[in-house]
Amino acid sequence: MSISENIKRLKQEIPESVSIIAVSKTRSGEEIMEARHAGQLSFGENKVQELKAKKELLPGEIDWHFIGHLQTNKVKFIAPFINVVHSIDSIKLLAELNREAEKWNRSIDCLLQFHIATEETKFGLNFPEAMAILTSPAFAGLNNIRISGVMGMASFTDDQHLVHREFRALHEYYVRLKKEFFNPDQDFCEISMGMSGDYRIAIEEGSTMIRVGTVIFGK
Ligand SMILES: *Cc1c(COP(=O)(O)O)cnc(C)c1O
Image 1 (tube, helix red, strand yellow):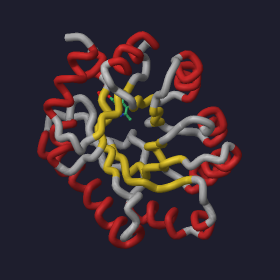
Image 2 (cartoon, rainbow, N blue to C red):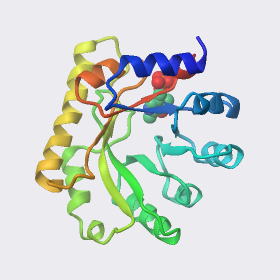
Image 3 (spheres, rainbow, N blue to C red):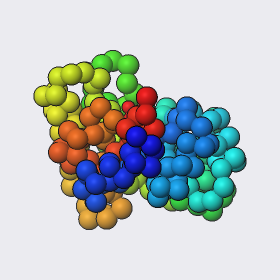
């Protein structure tokens, strides 16, 4: 199957309301352009240098998302063009994104990354940590970032019940934050969950945004 066929098949399979972020890390400019020509607009990268190089290389309009762990000292390289950062895990990172976005007179959408997997290795916040960010005095003054939702990664496992539970937990965090903090803010509306191996489960549990590489670009 070609990249364009994979995109077409995926679009037919999932609800129209769920957006697709094509995860293009390690993929070539040619592969990205093939997906772009098949109508895919949003792409996700997890390394700053790789993203910056691709941004400079590729022509035309691309909606870039950052999905990996982001160090504050690298924010300046992507702030001029990044539209969504999925991996917010501290007020320090938000403040730096805000500072750099302000320089470029832009607004950057940010998703709070939650730790939902049982594995120790994955980054992310727990609920009290997220609330601490949102209620901190520093947060109130950030006018060039917008918290538009939550993101999480499930455990890498064959246990589908566990994956369901983890995605359900992220959905519940989203609902609680919306109710306790954002209501009735329409901007807080995204649940970024689901990768190639588990996007069907994620959609069943309320995902609004799937981040998929392998199902689009192959192994
Ligand atoms: C690599 C990656 C994905 C996509 O993984 P696939 O299994 O290729 O779909 C999604 N989200 C994050 C954060 C990633 O690093």
